[in-house]
Length: 338
Image 1 (cartoon, rainbow, N blue to C red):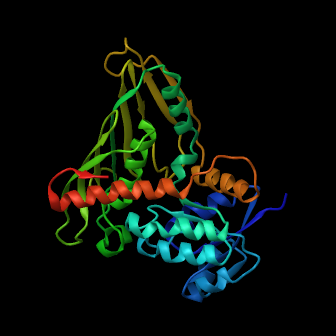
Image 2 (spheres, rainbow, N blue to C red):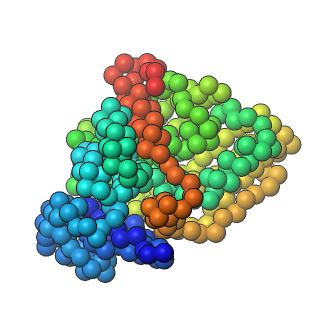
């Protein structure tokens, strides 16, 4: 079967340093082109990554009939516009998280997808890591009973005023950047959607972004608590992260659940009704995998019509609804309905 021909809209750091190199290791796809609004920048990015074609505009790449699918690593506030344009151009779309600035604007993606007949997904690479399927199997097996609570943390230390993650108007701050991970993780652990949400925010007085954020999510079966920071923990380009859950007859703990800046081994520790403290009953160990590569491989198989798991865009919109509710609670100082 022929390789899926991919184009990349934008020369963002995550594309150049992580996603493109990862996807280039996959046998069923080719990164055929990269576009920037500055042709010189596109040419430099193409040269650095070994991509054949460079385009001086996003429109030029979308007009190329050879390109079948596009990866969009643009700033958050540009996602919807270029997702819709890519679908209208007849391309399959994989767009970085979070999919939008709010759930309402993301609703247009459903109609655009249905009209085009193409596939669109949010590029949440964690959904491709085998540890999450393994956690789901543990929960669904009944081994530890129903999940009653989730507690998760994610933080990094980035005080660079020029980093897009520290620019409020384009979706910077802890909630959008890493809250999207932890909310997704909580939803995946419960296998359900929260009904109410509340957040406590500490804002950076210069950036205007949330730098320390605590979240409570109420699910039908229990609660999730989340702690986020963009100015705590490691400052070397990595992050500190973990997820733990308590269930009716035991518990589980993931030591590296989310973003892997460097592919790394990770574990799920499982405790039963006799497991005290951190003394787990058994452990699931996972070798280092590149979840960006797994994402590109799986999505390309979808493009070729193979029977592999899909992640409907409706799940991304549901995540945005939770983010919206948490953000509203900053002003209301109360729980908000999701």
